[in-house]
Image (cartoon, rainbow, N blue to C red; front, side, top):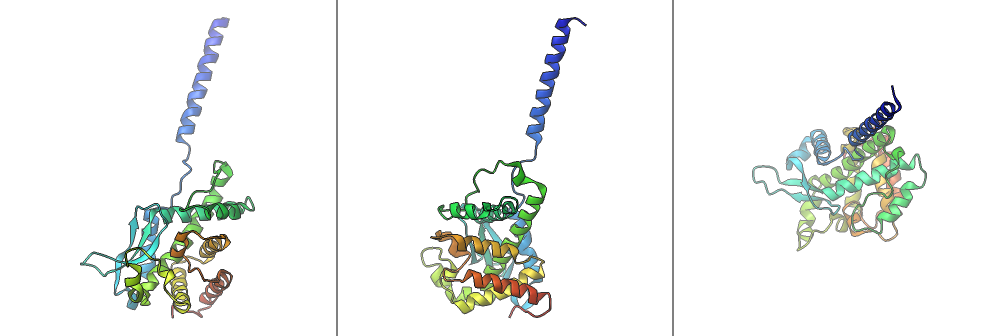
Length: 267
């Protein structure tokens, strides 16, 4: 083979290598979350199926309603469907994004200590649930990290959906509905008293654990809010401003321990 032919073959081989590399890059797994609206709906169905029958009477079987807003919102509402029980919970796409990011930051913190705290500090300065910065590091998207991210997301979504649902069957929504809907969307956590909040936490923990959603994710979510100096307005949809998070963390851990020893009921 003459020199010209050898050069042609080398060029062709190089082009083929570049083409294969480009295709591989195009077909590489996208850095996206598998947790979305369908996950929230599935978790909602799990919570509904395990809820005490007496509490399900006025709850819409399709009680999780998804809103496209980018603002993080999770709140009890009344459904406009006249053919179904009225009690529902609204979850925004912004809220789904928020807890995806918080769950991911918490999972990354196990391989890069301090990542979670830094993310929360940045989050406190934002009006919505922005993504953690500098997320291109392949370590952050490894299978073990993403498995933990998914588990934490499920636990966060399970607990906060269960809390919002409990406001219906514990009577809190009916008590405060007029104030919540008085010209603006007011978080119920701005209105309930400490005893009502504690009752919701207890009932929601039992409901979540009945679905095998542990408390670790909820504790991480509440801790994230507690780390913020000045809390963004959206945090009121998740946690009352006066809630003692350190005490809440201990309560959740105790409830989980009691649950597995058969020592706790919804109320």
